[in-house]
Image (tube, rainbow, N blue to C red; front, side, top):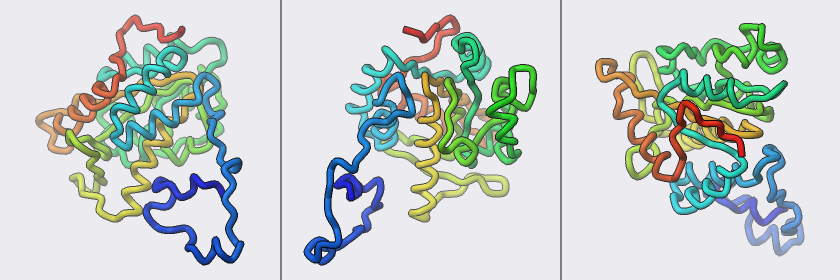
Length: 250
């Protein structure tokens, strides 16, 4: 086994083996078994490391990695969905594919036209052309982490909801039930929710824009406080705001 399998990200604090396994010769550690370079993005192998450090609230590392990424792998931030869509349309060339992805728990993106409970038909979303309203190109149907896990697009818009929100120090994890957001307390559920965003943020081969809504002060399920600190945190690690005329290619 790889020595990296002892990382908390994989073990969640639970030992995979004990000293007896090592002593008996049943377990052998081989560092060459760790695939340290991601091939998901051909433009940068640091995307996964950047996303991990950002979600782990390791701001210095995230900032350093972002500065190396931006030269070859554009990542931008916006609160204007129309601007995000415009950027994707303008930056994609030829047959390069783009689309919107969001967490399966992002139930309060409905006011922006995204119903994560409405399942996509993968073959239509991933394969059909720009003339098909069911395709990713139309940016009307949104793919969740379950739809896109193990698959990629060239360019993505990650629509970020209040199920994962920053409080100024760490992440707050929520699940929308009935008419309100509820705390996610189960350890496994917390891991899966955070991992959902890890998946969504690593689905683009060439670059992405992250859309975080402003929220709505008269809607208690979309209060601006649920979104503002997340936006400020992503800005603090260095992610640049998207200008309407931003090209993004280098």
